[in-house]
Image (cartoon, rainbow, N blue to C red; front, side, top):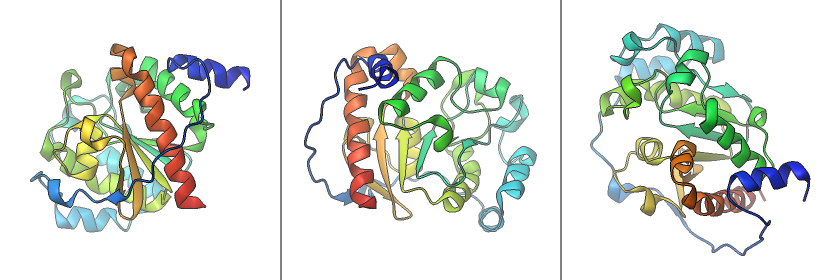
Length: 234
């Protein structure tokens, strides 16, 4: 194990690299737990579905479809490789993200970088985005209508990238992405599907900073994600 990988595992509270057999778990679609969250306007959805990357980013910057835009400094479009095999999706920008215009910066971003490095990925090789592109006031959870207003942009990013795996970090991201009300504990450890793309759910890095005892669970989630990715790309 190289020094950098060991340091990343240390950040996750893991002192040794453990290879464990993972169970074969069938994909689920969460059809039985779909929420009644609002959906985006059909015209906006149709328009977003035709956009290329420059058009999409310009549309995000100009968007006033929900109340969040009026209260944020700038939009946080997303960052990374437009041909990424892995896509990481969180809930929404925080104060530092709002200031820099980039998702997952600061301490949570550093931990996410370590989580990715622990499974052999670099930040610049994945694509990182959020459920909403503008910071909710006081870092509150995005409201259902706010998430719905932003969903066409996220769906178009996913369609343009066509990742081979989506890693949803945190309950809010997972529930909005999968349109479910199931708790995080029920969403972890299963392969979900979104537009035919496998989705694996884990903890948000900010939560892990507050609750480091769950870092080992997050490490198990990451191993499961690698296993799922390997199965789908074999």
